[in-house]
Image (spheres, rainbow, N blue to C red):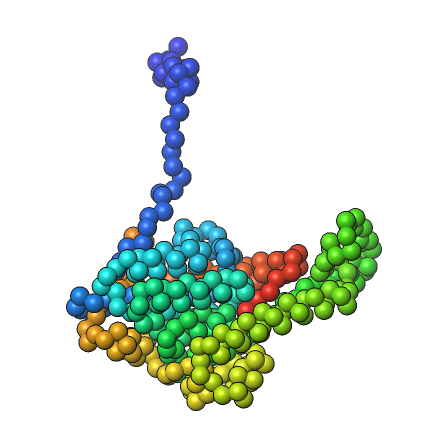
Length: 313
């Protein structure tokens, strides 16, 4: 018998097992300075892509946590640092789920109140619906000259595939404990009662959005009415209506944050995991969302009622 075979038998007989980790454990975020000097710090965080409670699309293959846990981790790091005198929130989002958008707003608002530092939102390309909802937590909103903002409103939909099933000769058979147990089923048209219920919830969530706009922005009644229709505005028009405060670039937003924070010099810091790109102020945390996210969102709408602060083209 070969010596190596005896060794294998001995190892198996002694139940010796070796655990080999398939991937390295996820490390916490580390502060990285991207520009500036001095003791004071301006922290930057990102709200980009679809605002969701969990991973979506190709993001599920990323080692990064979903948006909200990541944002919370970064805000906690900034909250614990006594040298942080301001927070800049870079936003490039068309919105997302109602609950996720509301949590982002709540966390940003809570940070500014607890830390007692100014918060400035900088709209990179778009802040629509839930993206603008998040921006409302800031003390000031700066938008790039080519950015668009707005899209205030709520949307929910489903795919009614009853006619398609009829065409294919597929019959639906459902056993249910109550009349509304298959509420909003895609297998049949919605009943008037169901549509009325969905409209009522949609209207109340819309009113919540409008109330936050009223609370955080000093707008004329006609502007508020115009926004409530769900339209979008380019940056110059939004500035004229006071939907945002300034039109400018990221440098301008940082200059405003330094002014509000009462400092002439400050280091700009972002929070990244080791190995992540972080060379300048445009180094953003960009999700890997692709067309798959649209398919996944459509599947969710097909199966369950879902309300979204989201701009849908």
